[in-house]
Amino acid sequence: MADLLSGILDLSRATPVPLHVQIIDQIKRAVLAGKLPAKLRLPSSRAMAAGLAVSRNTVMAALDQLKAEGFLESLPGSGMRVAPLPEPDLLRAKPAKAAARQHRLAPHWRLPLAEFQPSALAHPQPFAPGIPDLNAFPHEQWSTALRRAARLADTPSAGYDHMSGHPRFRQALCKHLAEARGVVAEAEQIIVTSSARGGLSLLTSALLSPGEECWVEEPGFRSAKAIFSAHGGRLVPVPVDAQGIDPSRAPASGKPRLIYTTPSHQYPTGAVMTLARRLELLDAASRAGAYIVEDDYDSEFQYRGRPIAALQGLDRSGCVLYLGTFSKSLLPAIRVGFVVVPAGLADGFRKVHRHTAQFVPPVIQLALADFLERGHYAAHVRRMKSIYSDRLSAFCEGIARHSGGALAAAMPDGGLQTVVTSRDGMADAALAAHLAKADMQGQPLGDFHMVPKAAVHRGMLMGFAAWGEAEAAKAMARLARLYR
Image (tube, rainbow, N blue to C red):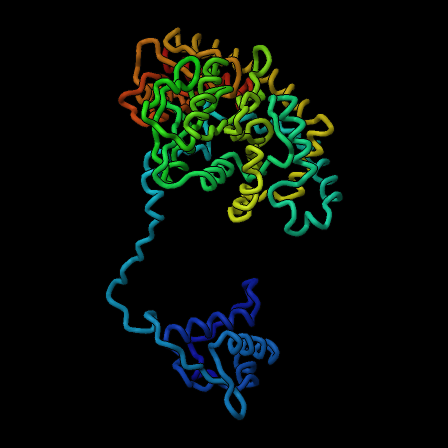
């Protein structure tokens, strides 16, 4: 045993890896490296056990596993030998330097990821946009809701039923959307997804064929452009003004399949789409046979007056798909989004949804239903509206004062972010680089344009919601030093 397996088996008792697993791994590597050639007879299990100072059962467990995986085979009498194996590349003589495998994504993702990849926010600095206050989440109430939900999970939920949404959650969500957003739908029209982007991918996969037009806001949400483009959509930028997307400025010969818009709080400019413009957009979609994708990403946070009702509530022809998420109002980590589809599409969407892996665990859905039904969600939103409103006012005042009047922040009616501009007309990218010296983060509006050089919107998109008074004060002090 010592001669045959010398340099092959070297067991260690200082590692948590079981001894039989060490034997398996080391013999496998030796066989694949050609150190144990085919048909070589191994010592008996007793001899191996004695030579390795382990129990015979340990050795037999390893040999049985190696035999089951095809590395060893039984001899007619007794014992084991190395099984004959096809000679793969790794057993042949290697060149001086093996050629590295060229990994690549599918070609249809190359351009979208290159042009529309969102900015990385893994470690956001003040005042990165689009982030809620993660520390204000009601953890205790949520953990209680999760415990109740775990007890309520039934047999259908434990299997493959309700894959497009648990009935109780869809009922609670449907009621909430009707009361808070003016959405007109039945619970069966709601498809629950793992995020708003997941919902966007679902509806794009279900409705868009390669080469069809997608009207997108200019400037607009980068991920939507990436998803449409990756599915073969032909992006057509439609300008945004103070009233939202302007369909009258779309190509007269255009024939869109999808029209993407953020009417309640345009991303990134913050414009609120007027009623006249909403009716104009609905008419344009109806005439073109297009579907409008209404992304209602943070409409819960309205600081002046009541939130503008959803565009979907005005739809009379079944052309609006309403997209929502709990990432901004509660916590991104909950990973729950949804799409409200026209009644005629509900059955087809459920069928497509089953093939997308956009599933949310029923326990999470039941906990959210509990949160909605008991009023915890509404109470949390009311609390955060007050906090965010105060932070918005403080941010706008602080930006102006600590920059000595060099910067100005717009005061939007709602949302989690606003636009900061330089009064001397400093370009977006230059302003971003300048503020980075104070460890302040934002995103140039030029990044949201398909044609940045033709951009008419200037400034930086900056968030104010995620940072409390102490952290915001430190950031503003750095800004003051920068402009001093």
